[in-house]
Length: 269
Ligand SMILES: [Zn+2]
Ligand SMILES: [Zn+2]
Image 1 (cartoon, protein in one colour):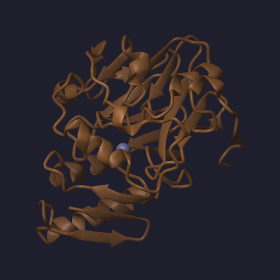
Image 2: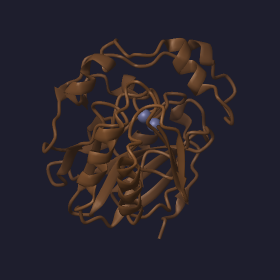
Image 3: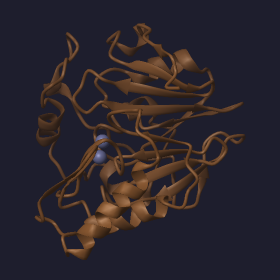
């Protein structure tokens, strides 16, 4: 069920073989960066006349070359949130990307980490950086968005409306995206297999819990996270919700509370 893997070499990406494309269905593709420890996934949703790119990857190689090999439709980019590993390819979409107002300052130059700190994350191991990639030249994208989007808005192709859910906690303007026709839920950095980051000053453990609770009533056929295993299933949502409930009951939803492990996911608060 997890689609044929298409391991094309993408001459236009700058670094052939950096991206892996997986077909979720005929009009939905995961574009992944498995050679980096973050195992980032961006998603291309193709409609009749337009396409939507959810996240643009790490910016190590040029994702737009891969996108162009999959669609010739005009593409709008939207990041689940403004972290370097989700807006890395935005420079190819600088006239056509949307952002949540809570992270407008981050995308326009006031991100709370220095470029040095960002490169520090980027160069953590394991990573097989492509030959010729120069981390010291890496710069996080910044620029003005075409439009601000808010909770409840619909974005994407006109024949495939995608609902915006403002889900703060991992970051203030984090968004999940729901495709009601396919019942796909794009969870960004809110839910994936791995460690949830809840200890940065810009994270909010209480808001995180509320955001997870908002996902619980949705009818979800396929959960599509921004990192790690794509075999993840929607059953994880109530598990994460229960974990947050138990931490809240013990008054542990505050920074410095510690690390908590639950099977396929953990929380660093
Ligand atoms: Zn993030
Ligand atoms: Zn991320």
